[in-house]
Amino acid sequence: MDTKIGALDVCKPASNEVGSLPNGTAMAIQNSVPSTVINSSEATLGRHLARRLVQIGVTDVFTVPGDFNLTLLDHLIAEPGLTNIGCCNELNAGYAADGYARSRGVGACVVTFTVGGLSVLNAIAGAYSENLPLICIVGGPNSNDYGTNRILHHTIGLPDFTQELRCFQTVTCFQAVVNNLEDAHESIDTAISTALKESKPVYISISCNLAGIPHPTFSREPVPFSLSPKLSNQWGLEAAVEAAAEFLNKAVKPVMVGGPKLRVAHAGDAFVELADASGYALAVMPSAKGLVPEHHPHFIGTYWGAVSTAFCAEIVESADAYLFAGPIFNDYSSVGYSLLLKKEKAIIVQPDRVTIANGPSFGCVLMKDFLRALAKKLNHNNTAHENYRRIFVPDGHPLKCAPKEPLRVNVLFQHVQKMLSSETAVIAETGDSWFNCQKLRLPAGCGYEFQMQYGSIGWSVGATLGYAQAVPEKRVLAFIGDGSFQVTAQDVSTMIRNGQRTIIFLINNGGYTIEVEIHDGPYNVIKNWNYTGLVDAIHNGEGKCWTTKVRYEEELIEAIETATGDKKDSLCFIEVIVHKDDTSKELLEWGSRVSAANSRPPNPQ
Image: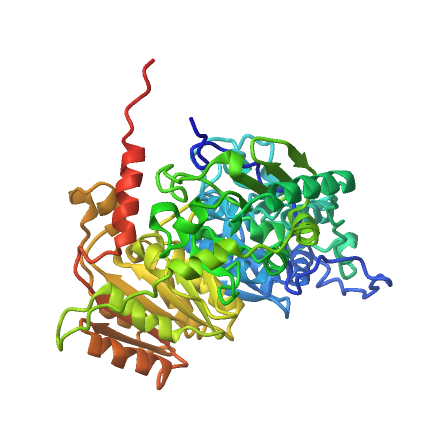
């Protein structure tokens, strides 16, 4: 019986790779150590932390005030290079830091003890699942309260201050509880450098009475981080390349597929170099969309099993060898464990490990080193791409809408495609937007983000806020379902307050459509809101915001013209009214397969 990839966990955890900083390189100690002396009013723990954040590329920090973090916030916003972005709730602050990290390489949020920490926890878990370096800072109890058996507010009423810490231990790669000044410098630096090296969130708790106190360790500008680069084991690298080249060069029609861990491995460029050298047909897994240039001449689309883009699955699954770079095979990406792949045909390249078919496996081999070295050893073979070109039939056009005919989702995205350029970025919310946005063809330089592994509905509102704050030169297009929007709608106000010019397409179909297609029930129907009226109320005449409601294609065309013309400097909110059963064909197929996987009966005991 064939072993199917996607039915088994064939992936190792992501490697501890250096986080991507704004210039794409690791920070290193300068030849001459800075000797700037800080005056005593600035030589505080809070200002040291602020300078560290700016140094790693964080110029905006997403915050929710609470009594335990107020003094810390005073010292953070006193740093000229750091802007405070006040959010409506902690969950959105965490989502915003997530979106910011996707563009900048690292993000940060600040909340208060326990009541804030446990609220932001879900967003931190999502960032952990996506391998994003995120600095979660919590204003903690007064240092004098530790060990006193006292009961504090914002807790569950027990004299135990470790509840929040224990929760964060499972979703962060390092935790620092700073309740004395002597080792505060070391604890903060270790936490931040660990986040960058491991590309995961970290937790820093700072006692509320320490942020404003000077200390000799903060009297100078902090020395830039020195992050030792990870190196491949040279013998292992050479052996892996030789074995992979022998395996692939024997194949008749090999293909290569990019996965989401290309990001954490910083191997996107190396992956493209391999595609250039080999001539192989090039596809991406759905959660890797945006990590590989879709204008590449050998790009054939998204490989997502039965819901792949047209003709992509046929080429991948009929190949006699496939190289997957950084894949995650979960029940969603494998469409309910239904991928028609065979392990003995696959080379699985993880950030620090290469496995060829059923073995051997080579550890301590960095993905980018492996892909670059392999590119020099492969014979050019474009058979799979030629087969794709031979069978490919261009997408048909949606049936033309009659005047005043209710707008269809496929017509909406036909017009969205024309909006994309190097000056735009797409944020796709969990739901049918996953499938509709997946079919968009991204021009060079167009950003694309969504959260597939964690799949938290409502993520996109905060992520859009953070992403747009990180790259103000891009116009962000966010596609959000009405159900998801109801979870996190408040922080549209933060977008307006900060002068963002995102275009939000609110797709109003009256419920949780993705859940409907997995398993329907009355719980999937939600109370309809006047979404444009809500955003108008949030706007309240302060800042630049424009809203409209569209039901027909002609109204959509007019709305897009206005949003990209007269209102190009405003936040634009376009509520799109569609039928509750108007979904992509991919969601219909995917939903039935995921439902089948979820409803498998128990194995016999």
